[in-house]
Image (cartoon, rainbow, N blue to C red):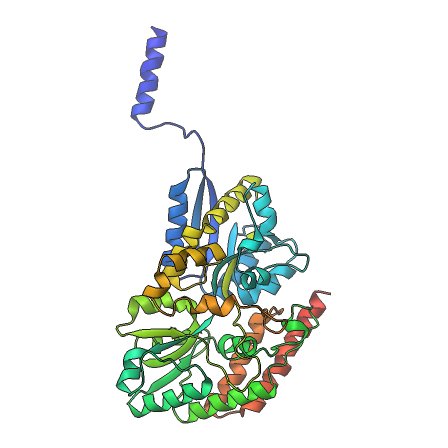
Length: 437
């Protein structure tokens, strides 16, 4: 009788759904800076990973801009409630490397999770940027981008130009801008991320230094040198374009991004990651081409550099959490996942296998120009073009924004602005060097 009552009681518990799960999921908190279509992409990645297994649940949380996300994470770390995974833009790399005790190297995390991990599988220019001097990979490349050139094919045709022929050099950009203005365009050319596109990538694309000591890869004693004759020549040209209404400055960071897919501006230099928005919003035919260059500069074009962000794993977590992170990173690195993300967003496929898979699928033939970001990055790099890794880089970019904005308003000449940006930026480098001796 007693056994019968127990059996009935057990059945009642089951009927009420009061069963205890056999295995509780480990939650992985992921803070990121992706909004709009890119935010949807991040949420889908987490959703698909969560559906692929039962042990872990990745919870993505939007924390604002790249700068706001990094600031929030550092404050959370000091308070002891940091996330498990943090998306950090490339200019924060040196800051994260110097944050002793705050991070756990990705190579170490993958080992803890018994995950297969081969740094050589990643695109060299991407992996190298996030690798320490001792060869240890510190963070996982995620939404890696580079600078590309977008142009409105319909606007080109209306202005009497060949819509299938993008301007390859800066003199050709000026000529195209003049024809577009004559055809009635109020914004022939614009750019986002002016430091990244017009100084940083401009430097590596022309194989000239942005900063000494191989752009900071050689140590914290690096100093800025982007006020060279070539840099000055370029900003003199941009200043003249601005005066003539051929170049329109739309603000800092990615403020200009909306102006191209909306049709307001006919040409633009910006992130390859803007493709997600352009492909979704543009109501016109568009093209994607390589970054313009000056044809009389020896060695140009060389290669562009990394942008976007990587995923850092924060310290102070339980072993089970790191196992979950390793499983998630393994999922993200799968060629099929990478290829799908590349096609959807315009960000680089972070592994060569993903690039080859995308190529074999016929995607590049069906969508001309979507391979530009990759081909600009997989070229052999030099000591001058490997990348730019500086301390207080975010503050330096702010200085560059402040100084170059005075060029477009007529407050300073290009020489005065670049000289001041170098002097003020070097003060930031000295501060960083002293703090990390």
